[in-house]
Image (cartoon, helix red, strand yellow):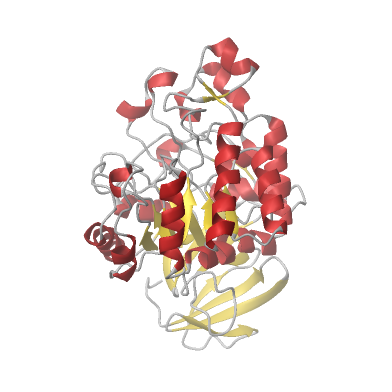
Length: 432
């Protein structure tokens, strides 16, 4: 079939896992839902598949510019499309850092040229991620890239005065600060294992949950004081969930994300010193994992974000303490969430659409994404096989990197097709 149809019918999909119907797409827009006439249209048979709005990832590392040996905007876009994403937010910790309007526009333009997903650059909060002087927040927002989300991810904006100023600045244009919550005095740069009996037994520097929780608590109070919006990146502890619940009960403008790996993997995996499982924040004990699942299900945590962090082998294949932080996530996020949340009965497919599409798009202010399967909406669609038998093979990844924590695991759901404004980017599970 053509990759760019002007008229497309998605036939017989289970819409949000609820009702079965067809989707008629004309010139990239959903124009009719139900039993539609396919005359003159290209038809995709979606019998047995669940249709969801295209996924939106609030937290992706594309590595370009600077580390094109690990990932590029093109290869990261491919991984995103294969994973069912139609938009990703590209983090600022590139080289050079995305801390100017020109740098943001470069990432934006690379995404447009790749043409597989909408790539929205995240701007740095501080110049060079140094945590001292605010970056060009206003200029980045007014640039062609229209930046609305700012983060020093990989580093915490530890100085409360700097964080306050950033929150005040972005309030003027409805921006949001996404915080990497890690108090450097409680968890320094070498901290790499959840602090507890295991970290002591393994001899690994401890990363206590309170190092996250005190920053989250501080930042929600700063958000209340400034009347601005703060977003908690990769929440990982039960204590953070408690703070978020309280903050939301007070009407404070705080949102939060959780990664697929923090919903399933636990710190016990570090016993083998496999650097694949070295991530920041670290994997946590089962009690934290269960608290995160409950918080995602009840809306305390707003979104799932991958924190897709590709690394070249020469950065990852080291002794655990010396290896780079991070793991791949774009291609496997939906199968993981399906297993953890849908198969367990904690969430429906409608809930998955909320936490992986609608809400992330709203947090980031993306008016062309997360609109749902509705007449008049851009046809950003992902088709999922909810009864697949998917065994992950890291060597089959379209990412440039291979630091895949899911290698060899089998999941019961798989992405079969992705459409960006009616244009197929993935069909039958493969790039078009």
